[in-house]
Image (cartoon, rainbow, N blue to C red):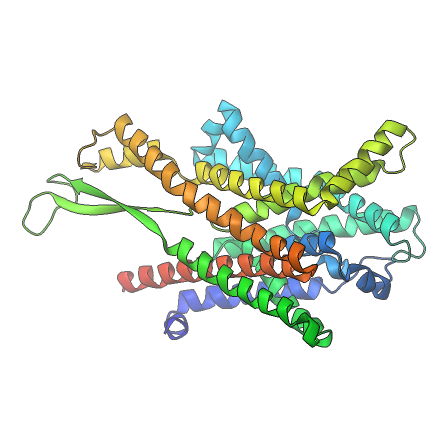
Amino acid sequence: MILQRIFRTPEVRNSVLFVLALLVIFRVAAHIPVPGLDASALTSFFQNNQFLGLLNIFSGGTLENFSIVALGVGPYITASIIFQLLGMIVPKFEEMQKEEQGRQRINSWTRWLTVPLAIFQGYSMILLLRQQAPTVFADLNFLIILLAILSMTAGTIFVMWLGELISEKHVGNGVSIMIFAGIAAGLPQFFQKSLAVYDRSQMITMILFVVVAVLTIVGVVIMHEAQRNIPVQYARGGHTSRLGGAAASRLPLKVNMAGVIPIIFAISIILFPRVFAQFFTDAKSIWLREAATYTIGIFDNQLFYGIVYFLLVFGFTYFYTAVIFHPDRVAENLQMQGGFIPGIRPGKPTSEYLNFVSNRILLAGALFLAVIAVLPLSLKLMTGNASLVVGGTSVLIVVSVVIETVRQIEAQLMMREYDV
């Protein structure tokens, strides 16, 4: 059993316990509210609010309490998206991403960019609450706003630091695990609310939710395990067989290389226009005020929201795969090791072949991930229950993070066993 193997391996056991300790610290910080907040008014405001429900998931479950870490890892993810886009557009950034020193500089710039983004998002959330729930901040003045923004910005930097510490232990992606921790902490409350309001008239809704959860779990597991094995042969002197001749091997290409990251990216982008539009709902300019109102209204349209969400998940699956998978580097490494794909010449033809195969299998992975992402929204349109949207997205993130974390832990265990 994997738990027994973890506790028998001191290095892995210490890493897991260290990560669990950081998650406890994160959850403690999630219950420290910002200054001047009326917690009871905030709780009632969050009930049956789909928009803020998704934003609460994205923040790691910290927004519902409007704590000092209410923004979660959102600003950091936004900054990461910006620099990854620059890496695909600007040649200088692309070259920097190929070198260790360059990647370290980009990571440093990402952290610095997180600070102004956290200030902007913190102020926008305060503005949103003031407009839609005036009772949340009973006495909102400049000092309260300043203290709230400073505390949330510091909280974001603190959560970002915790996420990087988790990633360094190689037991999972720190950002994803922080979001997972917030969702897992909110599951008991979610089930409690569902059972409290349950009656026979909602039986169909509950059955649909269970079906969505089961389909999501099964689908995500299948897509995580699905891969295309490309045959690779190594000449004598490389990876040789026992007989001394050329050895055959396989190069696995996963159907969904991006994991849950496209969902996180899509949520961050789809929430941005509405949050940004809140700044201009009281603008003096008529056209600007009308544009802000129109933006908020169009994203309240469930059909438009679902289509945009689908396209973003689909697009970000390709985008993030292009960031993490480089066929030219794989082809170069194969050539240096004396390996080749039967029927394909080494070098550029191998790179083009790998790019062709990865794009074909990624089409199925991107479509499946996008369908799973909008499936709860489709059921919400049928039943009128907003909890299906939030719950389905939560299940998707939780399952993906658990699979990825278990896989990294197993890799660490296997590496330690080989060392022994």
